[in-house]
Image 1: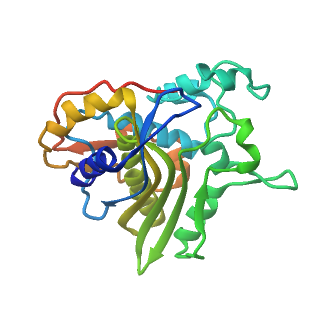
Image 2: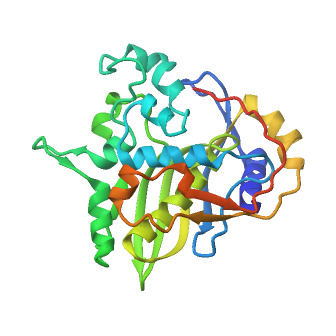
Length: 283
């Protein structure tokens, strides 16, 4: 919580106003932020200064791992975050590559599971990394990236959290996650939860201890229509103790995550929070 609140205050104190042409809403913007989450110590990074709905974040991560490309599939597992980008994004609606209602295109998990190679075949990045780590292999390139510059126009949104780099050191698995753009009041806690759960899952299914996540953000910003709520409400609240995450020990393989795992397999112990805050979402 402290590092999250410190980042919010740093943006307020040091940020620069930027006119965002895509959204039409100004952002108070800071370049470069580094956060850490201790998965081994099970200090689950869920916001306590406002109620945070962590299962929607986990559902979205499950959809990424499964390679979903349709907002309806995300809704079916408890995540509504892709409805607007798939259906209310004016540029995407006009895009000739859009297949129709709820289509997201080749974004996020599609790239992670079916990265298209020049010969027309596909690379399953998740499977490559899981297979290597399960054998104790770290080739210094245990990387899953969702950012495919050659296919940006084939999706409704450029990935924000775009690359996950796993490192295996003396039986402990670490994760370094890179994010090009971050809506701090609204989106960051989703990203924090997903980084934490991704490392916890990958450590469990590959048979290693979980270490830390190192979360690197390039462009951290607060939208102008969020600033008052952040300053006058959330930043004036006292943080509460962090909860602990209980992950179903029956999750053993990548196939388990693909087939039967649901948000019911992730439970929190000791979560306390202040009331929810309805930050505006900018498409």
